[in-house]
Image: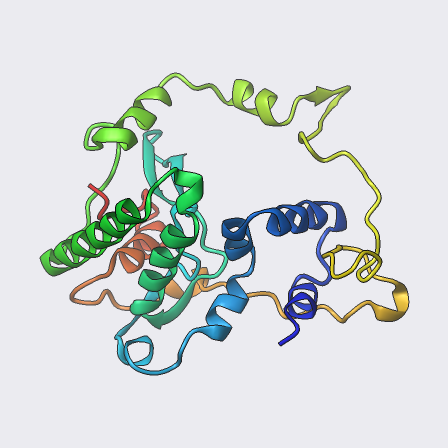
Length: 251
């Protein structure tokens, strides 16, 4: 399997400067590579056993620990939840679980965790998932209900103002804003330095754009609510059906 070629084909047609930033990060860290190559992860995932027999649910599709974060809901309250649904899909419930557990194992170094601590974290995640799923009810994680690190995070967001946040990441440059780290730089074509990933291809080698991952947002409202929801299903449903903030079992 030519991994480099598959990554280049999958990302063909995207904005080259931002894409080069992505490639640079993927080449520097194993966890970032995992995050940026979701298509390779599922291509290598076994299509038998629990990865095929588990009941289908609406899944995040790219569940890893850095796809959780804070956002402000329609009711102006700050919530903590999943924040990336680019790969959302109807898939066996086991897919989100194995993706999340893999991210904990591969990204342990970025969390500063030992192997035994990661194992405990994985076991705790599965136990919490199973326990919450058996109750058939998801819970909101907001300032009033959050505890521990998440509670501290949401408390710190109470007085955050949007202009200050924009200035931190996209300061004004004249009359327009410019994102930090977006400066132009040369991007050598693929193959010019070994197997280095590059977002620019010679015209004769440029691949055709690959299909974009299907988005299922317009489908969710038409599906009946299942009797027992997984956490991904509940969040997706609430976002579209009720136009409210998403729910989660991380309490």
